[in-house]
Image (cartoon, rainbow, N blue to C red; front, side):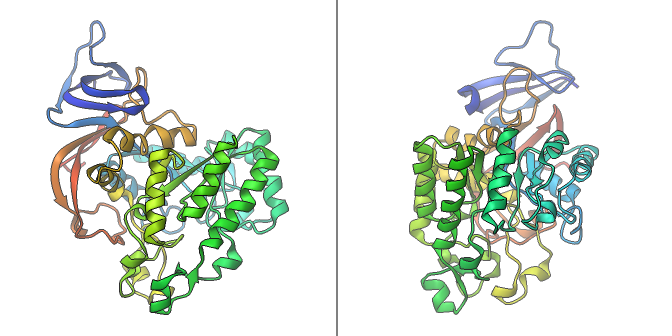
Length: 429
């Protein structure tokens, strides 16, 4: 049905809007007016957004939905439901499903499944190599035609540099984006924490900063050689950020993102073996965290993502080194981003841009803005709502988060996807 969102403060960084406006949505689910209604428009429903923020639906660059293959951890339905409850309307799914997304049939199946569920949009990344084994290239052109928005080997390293070069050349010839998790597997060497004072005190095997910088250096050399458009996923160290910044100044087609938890946590939060803080790349030093924060302000890091990895409870009950890495991050992506505004690091418009149109531009999808004729993917936020994250609030099947008990300001009250209200606070859908 056609509807109007009345009285809200619209924040749409892509169109430089930061002021009160009504938003008009046609029955076909597209925006037909911001500020003034088109001639003859009649709304069948009105959403009162007085005192609230109206912004584009969030775009998450990396969220593992665990389907297919790991449905005992979570399902696409449970995680897209969690996503829309947190204002996220577009998700990017890495290729490390079981089986991996290395054929057009797998890419199409994931999109069709998301379409049938009818909550958030799900865009898959295709595998860079067959079965993610780092040896034979996939048919990237066919995967691109099947709807993949980019290509990645996920967390599986492509150790053969010649194979990586050929993959980048293939991607460059079809103007495709390669998503890189830059880690040297030999330097990583089975580590589970940052190689620093905390890891040493706890007796845990460390991952040196060089594991990331060596990986970034190799990939930057190949990017320069091949001219491929590349995106570095979840940078965690100050040195890696500096290397990407220098490459951007030289005009290389590279972008980078950071996870929300790396902007708020450090190695000190591991405390006494808190497995909820076991992530890859690991939480690093306070200095690294401050450099990551500054890189958001300068634009070196172009997006904040959740790196959502839901786990069953047993996955975090093992000793730290044996526990499974990852945080269930969908429902804390927006609160942690808004926290950067409260801490005066970013303006509200800058923060919203980092989780809307900027990640959409990296993916090359038409999302994250409220322009005329755009799909009405919209998030309405109560900026004055103060709340505390508790396990019973989480809609994700994964409750593995170190942020339980944290206090946040700003809560999603409504989420619209294609003009349809798919989440309303206090109303079960």
